[in-house]
Amino acid sequence: MGKLKNKVAIITGAASGIGKAQALLFAKEEAKVVVVDLNLDGIQDTVSEIKAKGGQAIGVQANLTNDDDISNLVEKVISEYGEISILLNTAGLFDQYKSLLNTDESLWNKMLDVNITSLYKITSKVLPHMLEKKFGVIVNIASGAGLIAGGGGIGYTSTKHAVIGFTKQLNFDYGTQGIRANAIAPGLIETPMVKAVIDDPNSGVMDAVSKLPAGRYGQPGEVADLSLFLASDDSRYIYGAVVPIDGGLLST
Ligand code: NAD
Image 1: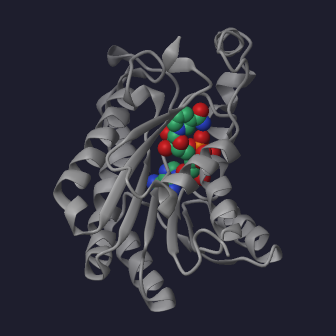
Image 2: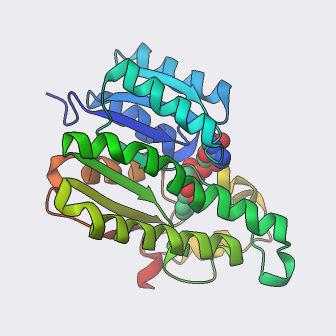
């Protein structure tokens, strides 16, 4: 039997990269997957791939910074599946490395909106359904930039630190009511988000990667494996953790 049989999992950012890998793996483990993203073509690709392999999924296009989109999403999931057991907050935005004086207020606000306010918005609408069943697992994708400076620039680093605080506080307030929230801090994972950096021979990233203990980029499927562990009962005694998956980046 699949590890997530009978679980309903909303996965944001599931049109691409880490979110797509999570959606494919969770469906393989028999979750009913809700593929959420801005990118409609990508949503359709993920849903078709899941269905072609015999899994269950629906796709919902939503901008996670928009309250109406989120209300529609949650209503649709409840009417389709009746409950929400797992929320993977994976969607995020990295807009090149920018220091404070290269970050105007509109970029700053955009980073806040996509990387942290969206978590507030969607989690606020999903949590009441989890509390009703006294069961819910939340996995938030932070970043190594949520723990140290240097990888992400001011907007990304600040918002990813906030994702970690958000995760811990959720646990503190709702852990005794059946809710378990953990965060993942990926290092350099080969996805469309970081393609421009990887492809730029002057970015210095290849040099950094070659010095990692793992000596390579991480793959989206590896972050999906960790997400499955944190979303399943295998991690039932893990609350409020921040788990790095970075080929040794934070240890060097
Ligand atoms: P990606 O660009 O491949 O996927 C991100 C997805 O989020 C895209 O499909 C995009 O359309 C979606 N998205 C962005 N804004 C949205 C919005 N407002 N509403 C709905 N969907 C939206 O990137 P990825 O590398 O898979 O990133 C997934 C998560 O992992 C992000 O939170 C990112 O910050 C984090 N992360 C990635 C790396 C890495 O090296 N790739 C490292 C650390 C953390």
